[in-house]
Image (cartoon, rainbow, N blue to C red; front, side, top):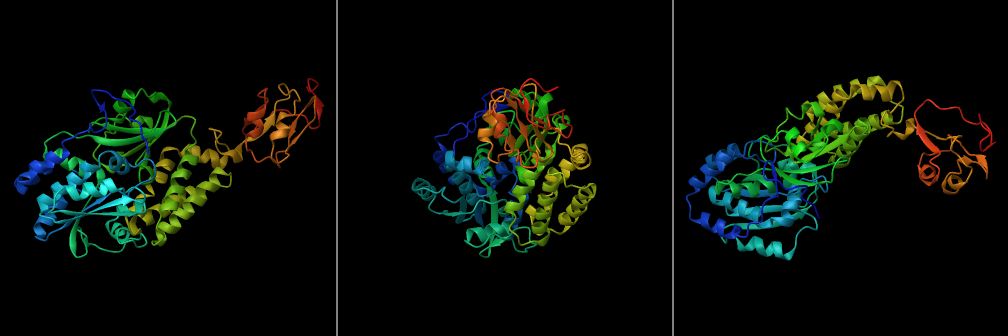
Length: 456
């Protein structure tokens, strides 16, 4: 995977994690330090665990237990290319191992597990893992990438090579093989090393959308999204929505950019921008489809909820939606929020709820007026051939896979709407740009073949 750094600046944004060739030396310098001193330095950083809870609190709980824990770094929470952990594995593997080793020193742990996505492990990584500290054995395990393994118990299943499904465990510190498990992600592992070296760290952000080139940037904690976007030269006036946190995140609008500051929180690991040409019903359907595809299926509320939400949004984009559907989504979401088995189920409702709340009129326009203002939902679109522009060249006839266009040389062509699948091939092939797309209101068109220039 190759991800470009979007931009380098000296203020809010800078090159991601300047390459540090002395990582091993830094780690060795901490080997003889008092673990309490390292713990105090780490606590000042106030890092978060994978589940967004305080890492400091988890450290305290493990210290109180007086049991030797196992350090687990989860680098398998991913939605594909926008994986911060995958980026760090490919570019800063040593920092991840070093961070785990520092935690092992602090907690007097002798065992660690680094969970990696399938096909990401190589011999060099295996050798590096062995080279750090003989007293801390790190096992490298590969498995499926999935958002459900944000849940500790689901991660344990993945580590053991079992089907990824969480199981019930009400304890704050989960036990893996009877040992307290401290679970972090790749970014936290890297920042543990920075914290004990008393260095500042920022938040890694995967930013994407139809207004910029996708990539990873590092942003100063406390930077507002407005400041961030302005530094990237993004025209904020053209932003319709921003999705924070992907499938398990939420939508906000441009009006919220100055109020929303980047935190050390997985919610800001992924930022996707949508401009005014986007249909938010369609974009929400894509996010909901992602949740449907990643649901482990164990929990009825999550399994059926993602299925129903996907169907309802699909119907709305196809002109079959009802106003009651929006109320049904809201009511069902509250039930899921209370009763879903794990964090995935409880959180996957947020994008759809925030979308309906922010873009209520757009949803109602799809349902009541059968209209997609962004001309994205093809079920609401009509293709027609402009009588004024058509030259009767027959180019569209040749590319139409459904034979949905009637015409002959020198005559204005006509599209049979019942046969047209709106594949867009005809419009792209027309040399005169005579094939148009419009909503429900149609212009006056010929009802039979008419010679070019004769229709009035």
